[in-house]
Length: 324
Image (cartoon, rainbow, N blue to C red; front, side):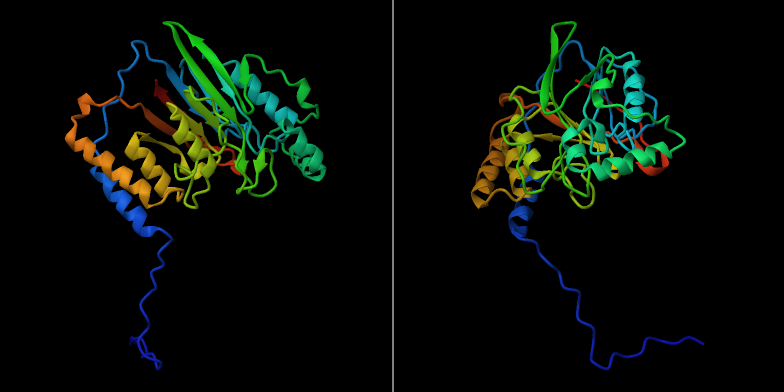
């Protein structure tokens, strides 16, 4: 015997309410325009391409690393942030055959943020105790000044220009900063702009631990909007990061007139006037053949987090390999 649903004495249930976010019409029109856009051609590729290998969030693991010319690690070398963990990762990275190995810190790498250690000694003591109790870690307690970096280049809100054969050079800006979530190293208030005009204009690669807003930053859109504005301003060839493990992957964008406008609108830092400029850019794409327009280089976003869950040391994702 089956029982049907009893009638509601108060009448039929109301339909679910659809909540529309602010400026939803603006974003809807921008999405339509973006789908109609005919972007310009990319610039010609260099004669000799460089192979860039990207990893992040290794958390004491040693995932397989393919060969290449440049190895990038976007932070969270460690699990607890202690000397032993970070030194083991640096030794492993330094042994890799790539011509250059460039590394930044992540929010787990407490040892590399002395200001955080000073302000939160209880957090450091907790991390040191956990590391000493972890059978996977040969725990010793030394200051960061004792680290042996070997062949690893470390960036902390700074840049480096790397020289390769065939007159190729690559300029990288690296930063460990992420919007605050919990109590970890290298974090800032989400409302604090720590990015505007920080990246040199001719930067080829932005290497950061946290993602920009709206690009491989998880279901909650945990990325930094100020960083995204800086990406649009600089238009680097690559933006490499991690931090949000579930958002592993790559995507490509073009920041011509239309691409810039769409990013401003989707990031909610533009009004209807920007949409008019976006519409004009779409129209030009139909009036002027793409071959006649100035080439625009693509920006590739890479979330290179290799682990599935740092607590279990599970390596789920492969290193991301790109050619530039």
